[in-house]
Length: 191
Length: 292
Image (tube, rainbow over all chains, first blue to last red; front, side, top):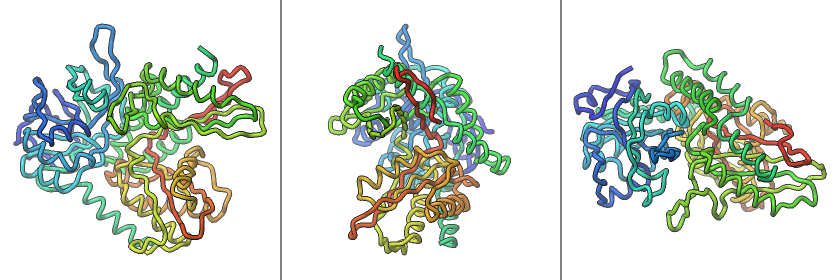
């Protein structure tokens, strides 16, 4: 198990390879469909959100507002990442992102972006909303809540020992490409 | 609060926080089968811990609490309008309590008003029967698995799929290959052979009301179900698409008549977080018993 703490250095990212299991500590920002489209169209990050050396988490959590105005994260698993394929590589490069957490993997453009800019794709366990919510130790803030609605907002989360697997590394390797090719060959021989 | 409203809120809570026993058992078996020390095994261990936590904390197993789909079996004379209005109220209240995420978006404006109510949300299907009982089943189907569903029109030349059972087998297995781990596998397939584009998908989803360990009464469909399950689990896609032995937990197939010009095979994919629950109501509309 490898520990990753934000902000992450390029060196630490380049040391990771496909199949590594990691635990993430520090601050991560959620961002999914609406945020990616907005940023790709030239939208600016709100003051307080800095993705340099940081991690974007493809996630729309369940958040409950507490009596004192703070937020409690009650479910926070990853959403399907491939929908951000048209936007991700440029966002990684433009904002200096070092890690993208999601599920299902991403395509060739993102893989090339990871290699060029020094970033990895970190696969969290889809559906494991409770285990992952327990890793959120504090909700530090929320941005674009009104504009995009709760699941699509940018949530700033403090996490501890958040588990994920490197499935796309900064060397051009992708577990998803590998498994697809092997399963396609296995199917051909069974038709 | 009416008894029916209370019953429906509890149905939603339990569906969102607890997996049915048959699904749990299948996941336990798949964990035993995965090779020790692999990332597939790690993934299933996290899934097991998640199931236990969700139940204990009475919180959503998955943050995507999905499309809310009710199936109501009711006697002749039952007030369906009242029942649907109560179901909508229950969804709103369950959302306020955090059993459901604010999960319903206006497709034109992009607005999410946080109630989970709107055109088609929730969906309530009514079916009259000659019994005196009211049974209400609920499926919460997340978007990740819904997105990997597929509908094929036979013949599908590129897959060498003709209008026969072998053609059906080819396209169903192609859907498994294309889905990889993106539908949060190990998954469950609901399939309808035939029907039109709408009923095909509709009936494919109704297959998710079946228990994983039941068998298809039609021997041909039963054989196809077993064959697809076995073959899919030989492809090495594995939990989350990490590679491994368990790609599917179950396959459920039905058939519907078609018009001569059409031959659709409609495939719905359900994630491992297979949220299905149901209740039989008492005469006073409290929960009499659980169906799963």
